[in-house]
Image (cartoon, rainbow, N blue to C red):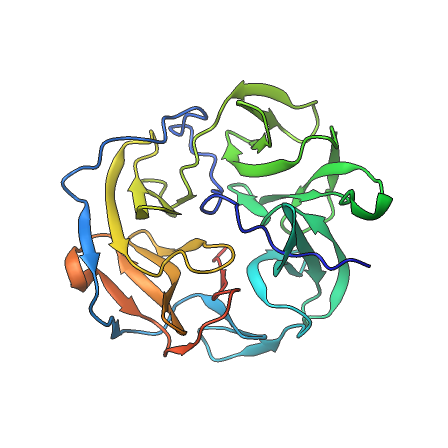
Amino acid sequence: MRVLLLLAALLALVGCSEDPADPVGAASTVTPTSATQPPRDREPLLGDPPRLAYVDGHVLRRPDGATLALPRRWGVTSIETYAGGFLVTDDRSFEGTVGMHRLDRDGRVLGSWASTGPALVGRGGRIVWVSLVPSEGGRTGPTLLVVDAVAGGHQRHVRLDRTRVPFLTRWFRGEVVYRTWGEESSYRTDGLAAPRPVPLAAELGVPSPDGQQWAALTGEGLELRQPDGQLLGVVRERGLRRTVQPGVAWGDDDHVLATLVRGRRMCLARIDTRLSGDRALSCTTSWERATSAGIAVLPAR
Protein backbone atom coordinates (compact mmCIF):
# COMPACT_ATOMS: atom_id res chain seq x y z
CA MET A 1 0.00 0.00 0.00
CA ARG A 2 1.33 3.36 -0.97
CA VAL A 3 2.26 5.58 1.92
CA LEU A 4 0.24 8.74 2.43
CA LEU A 5 2.10 11.96 2.91
CA LEU A 6 1.05 15.38 4.18
CA LEU A 7 0.00 18.26 1.94
CA ALA A 8 2.74 20.85 1.73
CA ALA A 9 0.62 23.27 -0.29
CA LEU A 10 -2.25 23.76 2.13
CA LEU A 11 -2.74 27.41 2.87
CA ALA A 12 -2.09 28.66 6.33
CA LEU A 13 -4.26 26.74 8.60
CA VAL A 14 -7.78 26.79 8.15
CA GLY A 15 -10.06 28.50 10.61
CA CYS A 16 -12.82 27.21 12.83
CA SER A 17 -15.37 29.90 13.58
CA GLU A 18 -18.99 30.71 13.03
CA ASP A 19 -18.62 34.42 13.79
CA PRO A 20 -21.51 36.14 11.93
CA ALA A 21 -19.20 39.11 11.35
CA ASP A 22 -16.97 36.92 9.22
CA PRO A 23 -18.05 37.30 5.56
CA VAL A 24 -17.35 34.17 3.52
CA GLY A 25 -16.04 36.18 0.61
CA ALA A 26 -14.03 38.74 2.60
CA ALA A 27 -11.05 40.13 0.72
CA SER A 28 -7.81 38.42 1.73
CA THR A 29 -5.39 41.07 0.45
CA VAL A 30 -5.38 44.39 2.30
CA THR A 31 -2.70 47.06 2.58
CA PRO A 32 -0.64 46.50 5.79
CA THR A 33 -1.31 48.88 8.65
CA SER A 34 1.14 50.66 10.91
CA ALA A 35 1.06 47.60 13.20
CA THR A 36 3.25 45.71 10.71
CA GLN A 37 6.49 44.66 12.37
CA PRO A 38 9.96 44.44 10.81
CA PRO A 39 11.95 41.19 10.59
CA ARG A 40 13.65 40.04 13.77
CA ASP A 41 16.84 38.00 13.91
CA ARG A 42 17.58 37.88 17.62
CA GLU A 43 17.31 34.62 19.52
CA PRO A 44 13.89 34.53 21.25
CA LEU A 45 13.94 34.31 25.02
CA LEU A 46 12.62 31.24 26.82
CA GLY A 47 9.28 32.22 28.33
CA ASP A 48 6.59 30.48 30.34
CA PRO A 49 5.64 26.92 29.28
CA PRO A 50 2.62 26.51 26.99
CA ARG A 51 -0.80 26.48 28.62
CA LEU A 52 -2.12 24.06 26.01
CA ALA A 53 -1.23 20.42 25.40
CA TYR A 54 1.27 19.92 22.59
CA VAL A 55 2.97 17.07 20.74
CA ASP A 56 6.62 16.55 21.66
CA GLY A 57 7.91 13.99 19.17
CA HIS A 58 5.63 11.01 19.83
CA VAL A 59 4.32 12.21 23.19
CA LEU A 60 1.35 14.46 23.98
CA ARG A 61 2.36 16.70 26.88
CA ARG A 62 -0.32 18.41 28.93
CA PRO A 63 0.15 21.57 31.03
CA ASP A 64 -0.37 19.60 34.26
CA GLY A 65 2.58 17.34 33.44
CA ALA A 66 0.53 14.35 32.26
CA THR A 67 1.77 12.62 29.10
CA LEU A 68 0.30 10.26 26.50
CA ALA A 69 2.31 8.08 24.13
CA LEU A 70 1.33 8.51 20.47
CA PRO A 71 1.98 6.16 17.51
CA ARG A 72 5.59 6.18 16.35
CA ARG A 73 4.99 5.24 12.71
CA TRP A 74 4.65 8.87 11.66
CA GLY A 75 4.90 12.39 13.00
CA VAL A 76 1.76 14.25 14.12
CA THR A 77 1.10 17.56 12.34
CA SER A 78 -2.33 18.40 13.82
CA ILE A 79 -4.45 17.06 16.65
CA GLU A 80 -8.06 17.65 17.71
CA THR A 81 -10.24 16.16 20.43
CA TYR A 82 -12.91 13.78 19.10
CA ALA A 83 -15.25 11.16 20.60
CA GLY A 84 -13.24 10.69 23.78
CA GLY A 85 -10.01 10.40 21.80
CA PHE A 86 -8.34 12.33 19.01
CA LEU A 87 -8.22 12.99 15.27
CA VAL A 88 -4.68 13.55 13.99
CA THR A 89 -2.96 14.13 10.67
CA ASP A 90 0.53 12.85 9.93
CA ASP A 91 3.62 14.11 8.16
CA ARG A 92 3.21 11.97 5.03
CA SER A 93 1.53 13.28 1.87
CA PHE A 94 1.09 12.56 -1.79
CA GLU A 95 -0.49 14.80 -4.44
CA GLY A 96 -2.64 16.73 -2.00
CA THR A 97 -3.68 13.85 0.23
CA VAL A 98 -3.11 13.69 3.98
CA GLY A 99 -2.91 10.76 6.34
CA MET A 100 -5.64 11.06 9.00
CA HIS A 101 -6.11 8.75 11.98
CA ARG A 102 -8.62 8.33 14.77
CA LEU A 103 -7.00 7.53 18.13
CA ASP A 104 -8.65 6.38 21.33
CA ARG A 105 -8.04 8.06 24.68
CA ASP A 106 -4.95 5.88 25.18
CA GLY A 107 -3.39 6.87 21.85
CA ARG A 108 -4.18 3.62 20.01
CA VAL A 109 -5.15 3.83 16.33
CA LEU A 110 -8.82 2.99 15.73
CA GLY A 111 -8.90 3.83 12.03
CA SER A 112 -6.93 5.49 9.22
CA TRP A 113 -7.89 7.09 5.92
CA ALA A 114 -6.85 9.76 3.45
CA SER A 115 -7.88 13.39 3.89
CA THR A 116 -6.72 16.82 2.69
CA GLY A 117 -5.89 18.56 5.96
CA PRO A 118 -6.71 18.89 9.65
CA ALA A 119 -10.20 18.49 11.06
CA LEU A 120 -12.05 21.74 11.82
CA VAL A 121 -13.97 22.38 15.02
CA GLY A 122 -16.70 25.02 15.06
CA ARG A 123 -18.52 26.79 17.82
CA GLY A 124 -21.32 24.68 19.19
CA GLY A 125 -19.15 21.58 19.46
CA ARG A 126 -19.23 20.38 15.84
CA ILE A 127 -16.31 18.92 13.90
CA VAL A 128 -15.76 18.22 10.21
CA TRP A 129 -13.12 16.44 8.15
CA VAL A 130 -12.59 15.12 4.62
CA SER A 131 -12.43 11.40 3.82
CA LEU A 132 -11.37 10.24 0.37
CA VAL A 133 -9.65 7.46 -1.55
CA PRO A 134 -6.55 8.52 -3.54
CA SER A 135 -6.82 7.58 -7.19
CA GLU A 136 -3.31 6.19 -7.60
CA GLY A 137 -3.04 2.44 -8.03
CA GLY A 138 -6.47 2.22 -9.65
CA ARG A 139 -8.33 2.42 -6.36
CA THR A 140 -11.72 4.14 -6.22
CA GLY A 141 -14.05 5.24 -3.46
CA PRO A 142 -16.25 8.11 -2.31
CA THR A 143 -15.08 11.58 -1.37
CA LEU A 144 -16.95 12.65 1.75
CA LEU A 145 -17.37 15.56 4.13
CA VAL A 146 -17.89 13.98 7.54
CA VAL A 147 -19.69 16.14 10.10
CA ASP A 148 -20.14 15.09 13.71
CA ALA A 149 -20.34 16.38 17.26
CA VAL A 150 -16.95 16.65 18.96
CA ALA A 151 -18.29 14.15 21.48
CA GLY A 152 -19.19 11.77 18.63
CA GLY A 153 -22.39 9.88 17.98
CA HIS A 154 -24.01 12.22 15.42
CA GLN A 155 -22.00 11.54 12.29
CA ARG A 156 -23.35 12.67 8.92
CA HIS A 157 -21.81 12.30 5.46
CA VAL A 158 -22.02 14.57 2.42
CA ARG A 159 -20.87 12.87 -0.77
CA LEU A 160 -18.84 15.15 -3.06
CA ASP A 161 -17.68 14.99 -6.65
CA ARG A 162 -14.56 12.82 -6.39
CA THR A 163 -12.96 14.58 -9.38
CA ARG A 164 -12.73 17.77 -7.28
CA VAL A 165 -10.37 17.59 -4.30
CA PRO A 166 -11.91 19.53 -1.35
CA PHE A 167 -9.95 21.62 1.15
CA LEU A 168 -11.73 22.87 4.26
CA THR A 169 -11.67 26.63 4.81
CA ARG A 170 -13.71 27.24 7.97
CA TRP A 171 -17.09 27.11 9.68
CA PHE A 172 -19.43 30.01 8.88
CA ARG A 173 -22.82 30.49 10.55
CA GLY A 174 -23.27 26.80 11.21
CA GLU A 175 -22.08 25.68 7.78
CA VAL A 176 -18.84 24.20 6.50
CA VAL A 177 -17.03 26.22 3.83
CA TYR A 178 -14.55 24.50 1.53
CA ARG A 179 -12.79 25.10 -1.76
CA THR A 180 -11.65 22.74 -4.50
CA TRP A 181 -8.75 22.58 -6.89
CA GLY A 182 -9.30 24.34 -10.17
CA GLU A 183 -12.43 26.32 -9.28
CA GLU A 184 -12.84 30.04 -8.61
CA SER A 185 -15.60 29.53 -6.06
CA SER A 186 -16.11 27.96 -2.66
CA TYR A 187 -18.93 25.76 -1.37
CA ARG A 188 -21.10 25.71 1.76
CA THR A 189 -23.12 22.96 3.41
CA ASP A 190 -24.66 22.32 6.81
CA GLY A 191 -23.91 18.62 6.53
CA LEU A 192 -27.46 17.80 5.43
CA ALA A 193 -28.15 19.69 2.22
CA ALA A 194 -26.10 19.41 -0.95
CA PRO A 195 -23.20 21.91 -1.13
CA ARG A 196 -23.96 25.16 -2.92
CA PRO A 197 -21.39 27.47 -4.56
CA VAL A 198 -20.51 30.81 -2.99
CA PRO A 199 -17.87 33.47 -3.80
CA LEU A 200 -14.33 32.26 -3.22
CA ALA A 201 -13.82 32.38 0.54
CA ALA A 202 -10.92 34.31 1.99
CA GLU A 203 -8.28 32.33 3.86
CA LEU A 204 -8.35 34.28 7.12
CA GLY A 205 -6.74 31.57 9.24
CA VAL A 206 -7.68 30.72 12.82
CA PRO A 207 -9.91 32.95 14.99
CA SER A 208 -9.01 34.01 18.52
CA PRO A 209 -11.32 32.66 21.26
CA ASP A 210 -13.18 35.98 21.43
CA GLY A 211 -13.45 36.15 17.61
CA GLN A 212 -11.84 39.60 17.42
CA GLN A 213 -8.70 38.55 15.53
CA TRP A 214 -7.71 35.92 12.97
CA ALA A 215 -4.17 34.60 12.63
CA ALA A 216 -2.61 32.88 9.63
CA LEU A 217 0.90 32.04 8.47
CA THR A 218 1.56 33.32 4.96
CA GLY A 219 4.55 34.15 2.84
CA GLU A 220 4.66 37.50 4.65
CA GLY A 221 4.80 35.99 8.14
CA LEU A 222 2.10 35.79 10.82
CA GLU A 223 -0.79 37.90 9.57
CA LEU A 224 -3.37 39.24 12.01
CA ARG A 225 -6.75 40.31 10.64
CA GLN A 226 -10.12 41.56 11.74
CA PRO A 227 -13.13 39.32 11.07
CA ASP A 228 -13.94 41.42 7.97
CA GLY A 229 -10.50 40.68 6.51
CA GLN A 230 -8.87 44.03 7.34
CA LEU A 231 -5.17 43.50 8.02
CA LEU A 232 -4.14 44.51 11.53
CA GLY A 233 -0.45 43.70 11.21
CA VAL A 234 2.21 41.21 10.16
CA VAL A 235 4.75 39.63 12.47
CA ARG A 236 7.67 39.13 10.10
CA GLU A 237 9.49 36.42 12.00
CA ARG A 238 11.72 34.10 10.00
CA GLY A 239 11.23 30.40 10.45
CA LEU A 240 7.48 30.33 11.14
CA ARG A 241 6.69 28.52 7.87
CA ARG A 242 9.45 25.91 7.75
CA THR A 243 7.36 22.84 8.51
CA VAL A 244 5.35 20.57 6.20
CA GLN A 245 2.07 22.10 7.35
CA PRO A 246 2.55 25.46 9.06
CA GLY A 247 -0.26 26.10 11.52
CA VAL A 248 -1.17 28.27 14.48
CA ALA A 249 -3.19 27.92 17.68
CA TRP A 250 -4.47 30.58 20.04
CA GLY A 251 -3.36 30.17 23.64
CA ASP A 252 -5.81 32.91 24.66
CA ASP A 253 -7.28 36.06 23.12
CA ASP A 254 -3.86 37.74 22.86
CA HIS A 255 -1.30 34.97 22.28
CA VAL A 256 -0.63 32.79 19.23
CA LEU A 257 1.40 29.57 19.28
CA ALA A 258 3.36 28.37 16.25
CA THR A 259 6.43 26.29 15.44
CA LEU A 260 9.58 28.40 14.99
CA VAL A 261 12.48 26.82 13.10
CA ARG A 262 16.01 28.23 13.21
CA GLY A 263 18.54 26.21 11.24
CA ARG A 264 18.25 22.65 12.51
CA ARG A 265 16.43 23.58 15.71
CA MET A 266 12.83 24.36 16.56
CA CYS A 267 10.71 25.47 19.49
CA LEU A 268 7.07 26.21 20.13
CA ALA A 269 6.90 29.99 19.93
CA ARG A 270 4.41 32.31 21.60
CA ILE A 271 3.58 35.60 19.87
CA ASP A 272 1.96 38.32 21.98
CA THR A 273 -0.30 40.24 19.61
CA ARG A 274 -0.34 43.25 21.96
CA LEU A 275 3.41 43.84 21.72
CA SER A 276 5.83 44.73 18.95
CA GLY A 277 9.43 44.04 18.09
CA ASP A 278 11.49 41.46 19.96
CA ARG A 279 9.23 41.67 23.02
CA ALA A 280 6.37 39.98 21.14
CA LEU A 281 8.13 36.62 20.66
CA SER A 282 9.31 33.98 23.11
CA CYS A 283 9.85 30.22 23.10
CA THR A 284 7.54 28.22 25.35
CA THR A 285 9.63 25.03 24.96
CA SER A 286 13.34 24.40 24.88
CA TRP A 287 15.07 24.22 21.51
CA GLU A 288 15.07 20.73 20.01
CA ARG A 289 16.04 19.08 16.73
CA ALA A 290 13.82 20.39 13.96
CA THR A 291 11.44 17.99 12.19
CA SER A 292 9.21 18.47 9.17
CA ALA A 293 6.16 17.81 11.35
CA GLY A 294 6.83 20.75 13.65
CA ILE A 295 5.08 20.93 17.03
CA ALA A 296 1.32 20.32 16.91
CA VAL A 297 -0.86 21.96 19.56
CA LEU A 298 -4.12 20.52 20.95
CA PRO A 299 -6.56 23.46 21.04
CA ALA A 300 -8.59 24.04 24.18
CA ARG A 301 -12.25 23.05 23.70
